[in-house]
Image (tube, rainbow, N blue to C red; front, side):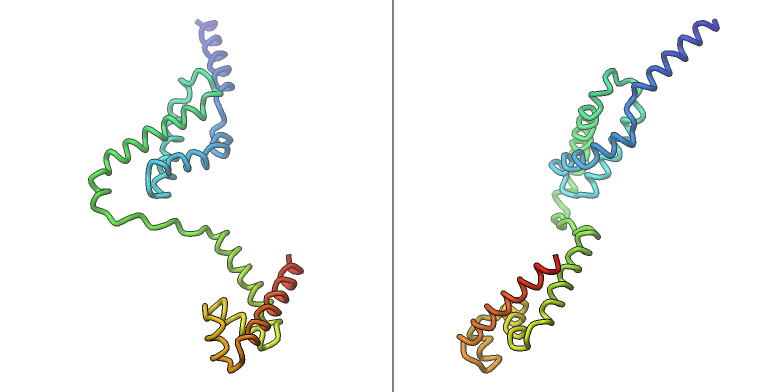
Length: 178
């Protein structure tokens, strides 16, 4: 009896050593699985939930996995099946709900955009007044050259000159900051 238990424990230990590391597998596959789920569902949050559910189901059954190299394929299969089930259950509600809202930018993207905007504003503040006025009215307020000329009380050619000089100076200043 003792020999049998040692053999079982030995097989269990060898089998556990062959199982893929869930954390490493999640780090390697979660993003691609989420993109895959997004092909099936409209909502990023639902896609992320499906991927999490897939990993939960995989964790429960990974002991039955014969080839650890096939774990990503097995996870993809789980995600596709979960997404199909999700759509099947939600088909009626999909017909009656408003369209999905576009994904909001991440905090990192928002912070990067704010930093870039702050750099542009700081560079704008270094321009001479007339160049700053022309660039601001043209690109931040979407006014045409004639409208800017009327607003500032100058000719259209003067506006064009100040715009070109202002843009050149901005490009130089922003290149120096990068």
